[in-house]
Image 1 (cartoon, rainbow, N blue to C red):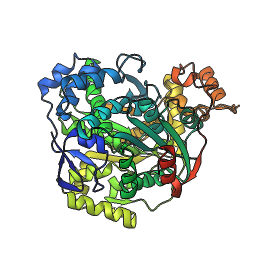
Image 2 (image 1 turned 135 degrees about the vertical axis):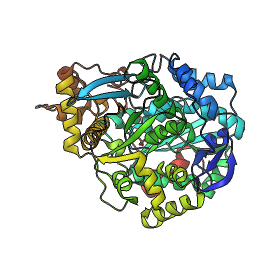
Image 3 (image 1 turned 90 degrees about the horizontal axis):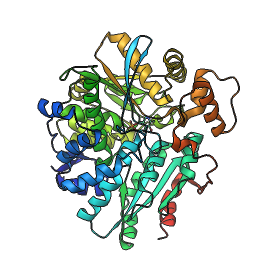
Image 4 (image 1 turned 60 degrees about the horizontal axis):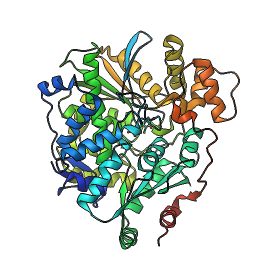
Length: 501
Ligand SMILES: *Cc1c(COP(=O)(O)O)cnc(C)c1O
């Protein structure tokens, strides 16, 4: 299996090269040259497998330059009982919401309580092995721009991993208090955290620029280092996400919710388009899917895109209670455009150049038609997000976070509008305790505590839902990082954090 760049499909690299580089030097993203097919018999065999065995089976087909032992090591180092709360790291909770059956795929039982752990616990293992194969001798400098959850999950995944250093940038006032505290208290000798004055897109744009800056790369090389990425543009992030959709399908069969071969709908609260793209990749491998429901918050650039074929990031940016989706440039959409254009690198490049130059582009009728036949786009404002949390809790004593609530609400709209009764799997992307204030407001709390940890306690008192251990043990941890930088100065921050220039 080789990988092409979305902006140059003559380029051909191994999975180790794709993972080590993160992003292609031409600015494109790496995509697999084809999708391995899951035969019905394979899917049937997977029914009786553990999550780890399913993961091995899928990952092996993509990382063909890795040995079986290497893949075993990656999978079993990542998805252990020590790191994930349950033996199945991605269990399904079935509840009814206004009479509508939901299957919530809980992807937040890992060490940072967000779905990013599913990929970021295994990526460092992919990456260190890839570095050995592809660029022996260089240390990897992981640059991360985060809207909150990626930062902490990446820090936790990479902390004290040999031959890696990690630097995380987050928007100063664009993440929750808990997210900030999680990042600023991060332990590890190879970690650095810095807030920036700007929003997530500013951070991401600057990181991309530093990444492709020739001078900076030279300085790193002289110091036996190279940049790599843990953002969802890295192939090593997407691949582990394919696994849980296929695994969830098997669990749906085992739970008696569907028969093998039946189609499901998949609803995903979407920001950078990584999580939903992984679901689409599972479908390309043969998973029976009817519709992908792409759920946005008030930053509804993807809703408009799916409905009109016009992507336009020139619009007001909203800071919402689902901050990990406060994104106007959904990087992974580039991969979908590439596939939908029939692997047309020039066309993809043209859209990306227009996006950079004008902030907007309109896709061809052909792409627009393909996307709208498979994807439904909808969005949900702050009031309806809170209403979904409240209703689900009052009706079923089930507590979901703000991001998951966006997907629940958009899915309910979809079901009502279309009458589609295909069983749904909804990606539940974070623990409600990561967003305690908004969740407390949603369920109606008259006396809001002041400190984040008092809010956690209050939420526990009111709901009797367990607080995940990684969050309860954060209380009282000292803060290690407090730098706030201008977005223009991020490159200097990087060199300083690495003690090079
Ligand atoms: C990152 C994140 C999302 C968005 O996922 P994308 O892959 O960026 O679309 C949704 N919910 C939570 C809690 C997240 O952390």
